[in-house]
Length: 394
Image 1 (cartoon, rainbow, N blue to C red):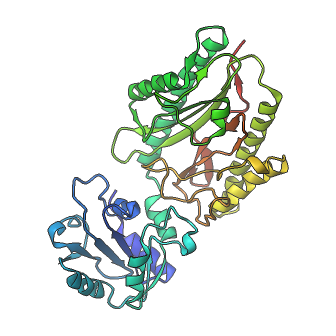
Image 2: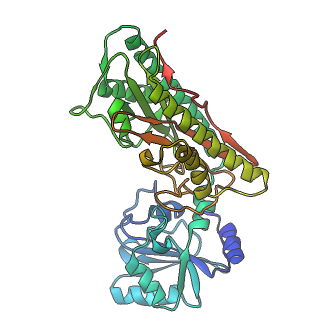
Image 3: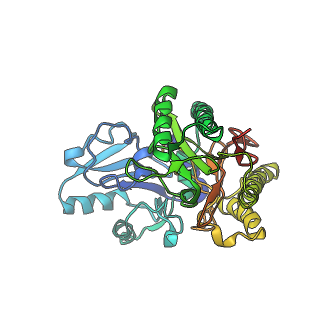
């Protein structure tokens, strides 16, 4: 989707900013690459480029002479440079008259997902008498808000992921009924095949984790490192994917099963608590919309974690409550985080994100994960919510 320059300029004026300076070197700033329409472009981007959108007037770019046409699809004039002196002169001209600009920067690296511009480049801008402020709110508005067509791709991906989850549960159900066992890796690879059947692509294969492996949030079975799945075991499935088409956005879900008749009480209680925390997060997002505002990422995380802490699980929380979704599984919008970072960005209309509280013990882990899209004044959950660990033996 082309960047709406007029809308950007209106936002800059409202924020009292002179402009937004996009910068990238060798893919160091994927946010700028996406906004500039270079993510899917078959172009070499091995040199520094700058694209400045002023609050008023025509945008202008600064591009290396050997890659002078990389930004030709964007409005405005493009000034080529070659040597470092011509780069310095070009940057002087680019920022002439500006005193306060936004860049992909976060004070103190409070939001590391946003801090994409290196300190040296920030210094070079400041040395020209220009104050650099965070572009976080702009990124949220112009990079994290989905079009209706993108929302439709998310919903379709969510539906497909749940079908794949159901097929995996059926494999586990056969084990619970006394059938032959399998392994984490074998089931994962079956799921990879089902992704292809559903027309989904993914950054990584899905997670299939048994017992203690489920206590590692980033566990991923491989051909050489995996465990067996047999009866009376806890199994965590974490799967994410999107449709194989430009502009499609991800869905990302986690479900849990017990390959037996009765889930152990300790596991059942832990899961009931994360389900309560998950639902508290949804309620917090919806309550803000009902009050005529957008919730901020940190407050949703705090609401979910309060449930976990109240239940006595403070020591087994290892990560934030959720993350932005986009064309990458971890999108460029607000994350639900007041734990690892403090994300003060708003969850805007048209944005999508996960809610995925988890608890991680030495012998097992539990996590539930749903997706939410802000549609007007509704925080819409785009799939079913798991109420309890699914016991698969009849």
